[in-house]
Length: 329
Image (cartoon, rainbow, N blue to C red; front, top):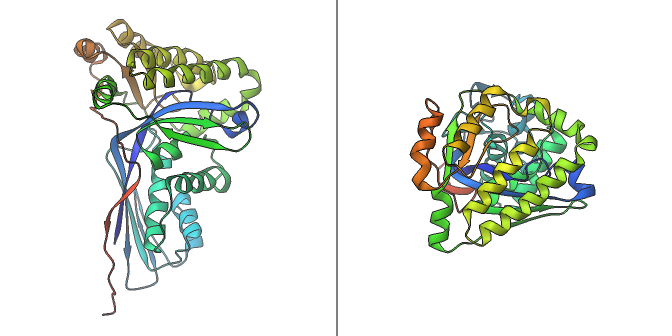
């Protein structure tokens, strides 16, 4: 039996510039952070040759080609696992429409588990690239590449994309006091609104030629945020985050709405240095950066939204159980 634990993430600044159709020509930059909320993947050997899948529904099939869950099917193909397994996915929070990169965390966690099951160990870069291949190339999802990398690497990630196809990921290492100050200012609130990100991202992708100014601004703000993070100045990150939300709202129609705009404005007027809707927008969670002394005011302003305490996950996807046994002995 193999069990993997893979973090979800909060995209801080630069989301949208990680779309290949943009960064291959213009280059992209994203500041992202893995959080201590996880997707778990369990791969267990079976005595027969069937494939059992347990997620929001259950599948029992006799061959990989019949698996309906596209991420599981393609991960099994990639790892060379043909049958005789039971695969279960679990998550700390509801994954549909959360804006926390759950589908990429599932994909990275699946690959980590299935390759470990096969006796292979992949680097964080290999896991991320293979996850991108599955989600973008094989499954045709209109997404970028930030989520797969931060899920694989963990920590506070400075991600650079292109020009061309190259992706560079670097964890930002802070002194303990700076790290605590950074993560203590992160707040996450559940809006109660779920949405399908593919529609928003598809429109955002189609709008790229007409939104080059906004995307350049997002890339510049990501560079400012990275510099602020490296200097141990979370207030700089917060201000860049707030400015990035104004640019992000212009990328596609469904990124925001009246209720979300009002929530962001309430957080800012209550003392936050920055606030935005996570992921593609349209719902999910609101991410706030706020000094500790103003956080109770922000909680009051965003009530009755559920406050989800978070901290930074430093490790990325990892195997937390690896038990091999011969079922015929």
